[in-house]
Image (cartoon, rainbow, N blue to C red; front, side):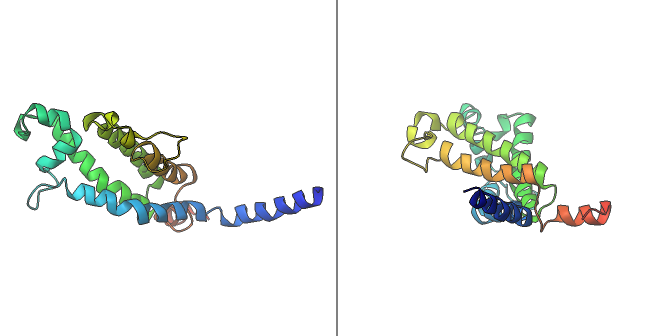
Length: 187
């Protein structure tokens, strides 16, 4: 039995050592395949009209991010503060830039950490701002037989997926790796 355990350890330690750089690369690939278009499409809905739409968000952007504040001012954006504008613009830019940085592997740890924060804020807004907390099927529950609730189940997977590059970096094929080699001379 000891020989079998030793053989197991030798094989899987070699697998882990030789393929460890692929795990963060695969996490970035899965993020791109599953969530990149989702976040970019969401960001596109927040852009205002014209070439400066990235600085003048749509009314829908405010309604998505500040639903109760928008309802309180009868959806008249001009009654909201500069704070609201800053949050909406920053959120819109984050939805474009953070996923891009993760996919190309540039400042990956910080971008993935930023996306985790984004997902947490998004989830809280969905639950408390849009009233999802009142709908058990939206909130979901862990350790139940239903694995696809929008908040607790799905977003737990999103955060776990994003935790991989936070902890392990960008992986073998990334701009982080290229810059690290070029600037710092690291292997």
